[in-house]
Image (cartoon, rainbow, N blue to C red; front, side, top):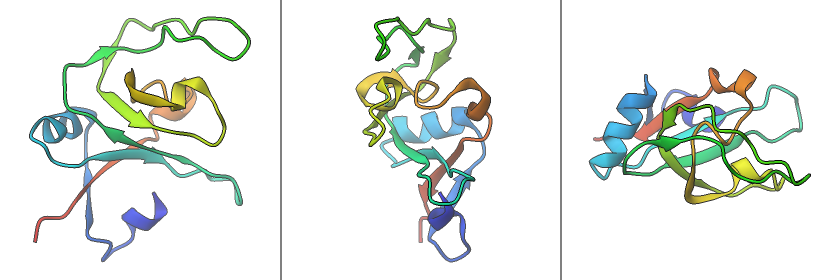
Length: 116
């Protein structure tokens, strides 16, 4: 996220998750992510997918427990992860809220390429 947030990157910030979803539904590329503030640690970037919002959670964690749904709707997303955290690996079956912990969720930013 540090790369897209610098002036001259040719990306613009999308202020809200709703606007990010609306752009994706128009066929415009939108990414969401969080830069890890710890030096040397990776953050996470996902692609917001078009389509209806879905309930977050409901997937199996590594220890056999099921991640409960928080009964809120979020945009679907696509991503992979080096950490193998199941919420961060999605082909559209998970939401933008599943990719990060609840404490990190409010720090996610949304970006789309600037139109010349």
